[in-house]
Image (cartoon, rainbow, N blue to C red; front, side, top):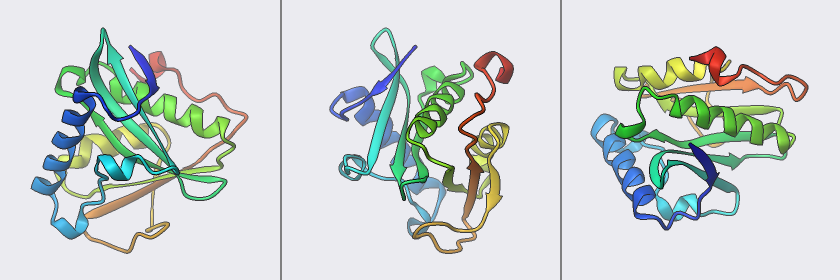
Length: 164
């Protein structure tokens, strides 16, 4: 599996993001959907990566710069073909490494509070994310969970073998 910066022009990525948005709107009230569309993901403060195997898109994740030391995880999604194969863990490991490279001291995210989002919350918790209050421009929302973790730029973190 290769994880690379993606320019958001591939049909596989487009389809995965459309599926992501469809699921978010089917699961959460519209005012509680914070997923970004393709155009929003092209903002200069956001870096988007896709994970591919033999040209097939298995997942994606984005990192949004909130400040010089604080980043936000956006658009984390694993394709059906990538589920239960460590794609989410690989993407999150890559993103945390990139955040360390940028000198970030904190990573935060918003995800849903419903049962549908429980696997995502478990994955984030496994990577050291803890629940917190709203951050950046978010406001308290009963349909959202906010999570954050401090980045120790001297630690390497768990390997994929340790996580699986």
